[in-house]
Amino acid sequence: MVTTLHKRDNEFTIDRIDDFEKFGFIADYYPPNTDGNYAVVVLGGSEGGKPTYLAEKIVSLGYAVLSLAYFNFNKFLPSELEMIPLEYFENTKKWILSKNEIRKDGLILAGWSKGAELALILSSRDQIYKGVVAIGPSSAVWPGIIKNWHRKPNSSWSINKKPLPFVSFVIQNEAPKKLVDLYMRSLQVLEDSNKETIDFDKIQNPVLLLSGSLDIIWPSEMMAGYICTKLNKLNHINRPLCTHFNYKNAGHLLDERFDLGGTKEANHKANIDSTKKIKEFLKSINQI
Image (tube, rainbow, N blue to C red; front, top):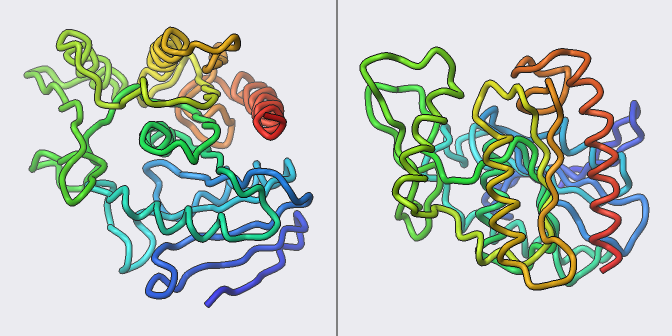
């Protein structure tokens, strides 16, 4: 069953897809203002549930959006962000591509934090994704986020019920003062091993990366720089495959509503400018 709602404040129409047994996924679908563009699948981070805030930011730009829940929503979805099956996203892809009002030859992914990590993974595995917007991105697959830290978390993601290779946290006697320090320490082990956990060489379509210099969750500025360097070295087209904008004194999600590093002023400015960058990027993808 799809329930259609009308959100008066922003004049949004929402098709609520909550019948998991029928559709195989949980999401809100926002039809576009103008037909014929790629739909955008929006992926939230460690908050779980439907990423309504980020989704409606992109809806306001005029695009069809699928605001997708993949954990922490109801009994049909995993309660925690661990071993999330990538097969789950196949159902969403088929459903949204059946909509008459969207462009049929592909989709765009947009995510922040863990959703940005997921978007890059999905793009590396399927060329149906014609572009990626990643806010506060990761250059690696990380352990899952679980409540019981007395046990070692498995990978955040799985395929065929097997964990995707991931970077384990490096735990030392002295606890890190900040979460970002734990990720920095663990990332150094990945660099030393010279192993990739995301197949960037398989990403063939444009990527927009947006980061803040005072991210307190993980080193998104550094990881975004690595991703773009890697993608643009691999790309053989006359235009760069990856574009990275880093915002000075801004935090993890580039938005003053979230206290995840940076100053309110810098996050406010980053929110405005990054939204413009997203608008320009989506327009450029649809002109290809």
